[in-house]
Structure formats: structure tokens, C-alpha cells
Amino acid sequence: MIQSMTGYGKAVLQLPTKKVTIEIKSLNSKNLDLNVRIPSYYKEKELSVRKKLASALVRGKVDFSIFVEMTADETSTTVNKSVVKQYIEQLKNTVETGRASDVELLKMAIRMPDALKTEREELDENEWNSINQNIDIAIRDIVQYRVDEAASLEVDFKERIANIKTYLDEVKALDADRIENVKTRLRKAINDLKVDIDENRFEQELIYYLEKLDINEEKVRLANHLDYFLQTLASEDSNGKKLGFIMQEMGREINTTGSKANFAPMQKAVIQMKNELEQIKEQILNVL
Image (cartoon, rainbow, N blue to C red; front, top):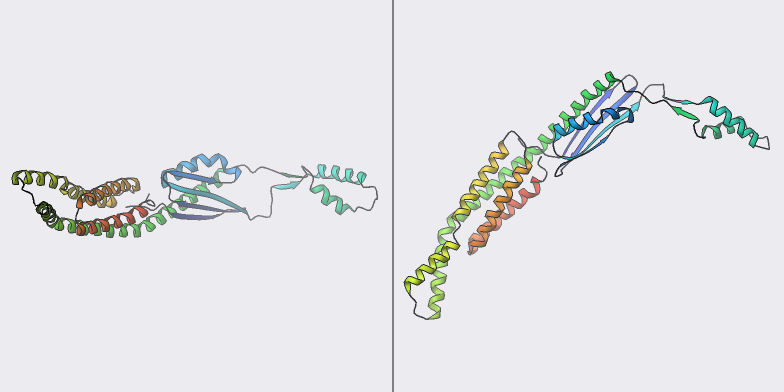
């Protein structure tokens, strides 16, 4: 079962003094590009969070965020009273007019360095355990999103592979006519020259020329690649890179068939196969 690299997951946790929101967003990328934003007092857990995300999401440009909103009346920031008092005394001595009010002096003092002090919140392990459980919920949410997103991709891939198979059958059906067309054109070219030829030598050269135009190997290999693509698509693991490699091999066989075709009706079928493959190529970049 394939997964898309595009996804979104979210979990919200209400703690006694705060509301914690966990968000995970991902887009397609060749490798895992992980960006983690969490409050400073959870920083010691960042490494374990990264390992968890890397294990679950594998690949993609992933943005992980923890937002904390304080809901309690208490705050960790307090006024440093002794520092503020000293600032006010110094401001009073500086003001010569004597008209400055205590309120105005307080406004000025509170903006001075160290007037406010913030006590660093220590990590509560029980609190983190609750957050960690919600991280798991957000991860399950984004994985399910990826699976759902990939369902439509899988349908599209199967339709386009079926279309390529149809055009391949058309190529196979046209092959006999193509050979006869090549023989007729060569015979006509010789006749137009109005010269005597050695029929045995002509037959030898014709066989040599037709061997260079033979596409039996390309037809067999392309058919095998198409089946292998569908088998990989139906496997339990999502492997976008492997599907991409198979698609490249399909492209080589189609291009070689086109270069050897030398027959307009067959070349039209090859162009249609290239068009279907190009559509797969655009979508495969988003497969995990």
C-alpha cells in the first residue's frame, strides 16, 4: 500500500495550567527533511521526538510544532521589586523639576534591564508522558492522511499502466505490418535505381537491416516492467523510489521502441505511451 508524502496531523491536549497543540505537516522531498519547533523547556526531549518522527514518516519535508498556551491565572514572570525600587530612586534623583509622578517613574523603571524576571519552567515527566501520547496520536493522524491521499494516486497509476499495456498491444499488432512496409520501401528504392542486384546479397542485407529494427526484446521487457510496477504498487510497503526506478526502465524501453519503429502508426502508439508515462512521472514524486 503506497503512501503520499503530503499529509497533516494534529492533536490537542488540555493540561491543568496550559493547552498544548501538536501539529505535523509534510510535503514531498527526496529524503527526510525534518524541522522541529518546541518550547525550550521540552528541548531535552527533541532527540527522541526526531527519532519517533523519522521512524514513522520515513521521507518528506516534515514540519513538527508544539504550541503551548497558558490557561492558568499564575505566571512564571514576576517583578524584581528590589531592582525596580532602585531604578525609581535613581530616576527621582535624575528628574530636577520634581513634577514626575510615581506612576510615570514606575513605567520607566519597569522597562529597564532585569526589572522583570522569568523563572525557567522545569520539565514535568508526567506532563511529558501525556504530550508524548498525543504526539503518537498526531503521527497516526498524518499517516492515515497520507494513506488516504495515496488512494487516488494508486487508482490513477493503475489506469495509466493499463493504458500503456493497451498501446503496447497495439504496437505488437502493428509489428508485422511494419516489417512488410520496410521490405516494400526498400524493394521500391532498389527498383527506382533501375540497376541489377544480387538477390542473395539483397536478402542478406535486408535481414541485417531488419535485425537492427527488431523490437521483440523491448516489447518483452516493457511488459515485464509494467507487471513489476503493479506488483510493487500492491506490496505492503510504500516504496516511491523503487517505483521511480521501474518507471525509468519503462521509459528506456519505450524510447528504444520509438527510435526503432520507423513506421508512423507505431510511432503514434509510442507517443501515447510516453504521454501516459509522463503523467506517472509527475505523480510518483509524491509517493513515499
